[in-house]
Image 1 (spheres, one colour):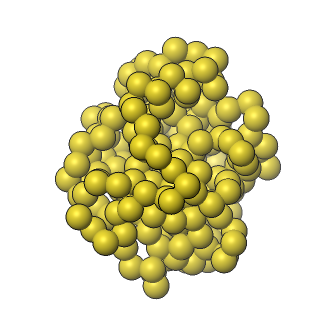
Image 2 (cartoon, helix red, strand yellow):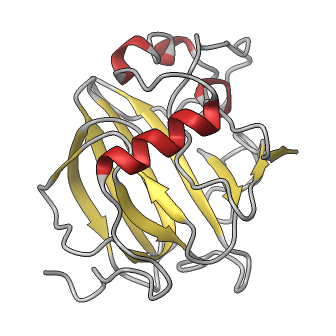
Length: 204
């Protein structure tokens, strides 16, 4: 097991059914398989391209962060990036309190793990879904207990906890979340129009 793969001390493991039920109540919809909710990923806005924003049929892509007690969605895809400069921000930043749960947005495989705290992602997971989309989760405080590279996860599983590792501002706890459609996974798309954003989240 990776030395960083420990649960946040304030958290206890949850069953998958409890997580799914909580998400369902929060979004006011039934939990359905992701392949029926992200059909339009390939046509979403891309960095450097002025594509129209799209609307995904409810419930949208599962929101990747527990929305309580704090949820601040910075609509900053394509904005300035510490790593890539102006126009180079390749995901969305979701502000939260340290330790809020981070979820797998689709069924899939955790194909890579970031553990070098000196690099931009800090602690992070990379998930390849059953629909051949890759997701990146950066700046985690820690990983959910027991998870390793190659593990299969299901939509709604807790895979880590919000933090400020890597090049995040200290105390600026947030999840950097990216969506990269296959087959090449090179070009990220704007996650915001794809997400089922809970009503209690502020969007900026």
